[in-house]
Image (tube, rainbow, N blue to C red; front, side):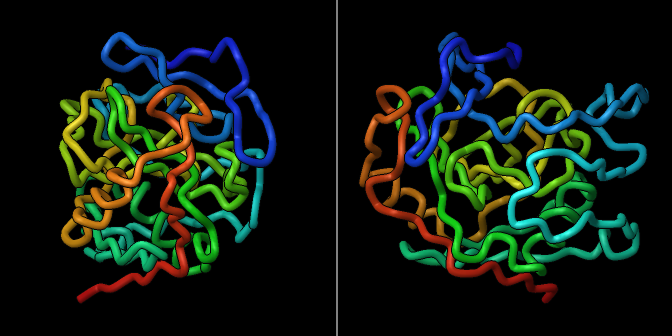
Length: 237
């Protein structure tokens, strides 16, 4: 299973931009983020799905730019929970700081700088893969924070219900977009798992039950129940 360019532009609610396609269960479905500059990664650790060093590389686009984080290993190791207060209810997940420190550090940086506030989850899939995708302040599916960083935690990665993982545009192109898995789903181990939902899975399932508008493909579109992120609270206790 590989990431490859989509043959047609994906339709977005406001603009059309070319996206990339995810091959999942023999069906091509777009599940991607911005096509920012990839981070060169030739280390043996990266090949095994872990990160030897965390580097945030400037990339485009830079929507709602909050700066580029500087990795702090001590802070990155601190466990935390993130609670997204949305128009459909609260969703809380435990960050996997021990398994994906670069990813969880980036998410915390963006959340603490109010990056996700007043954005919305722009994509829901209800066939073949079962995810709610968020983290793009433009709401188009093409937005990004102005930097990219390497993949992590991919060796043996699976995506059961409650998984929180990064969307991307190919290897080592992580930015701000992420997705919640609301029902056990099969994906190639190409999307960094960095969190586990501890409260609010029922909220995700309610959103999924509301369906989507098929604007991308059957079973793939904008959620019928709008999911507006009011704020994201980071808690270390």
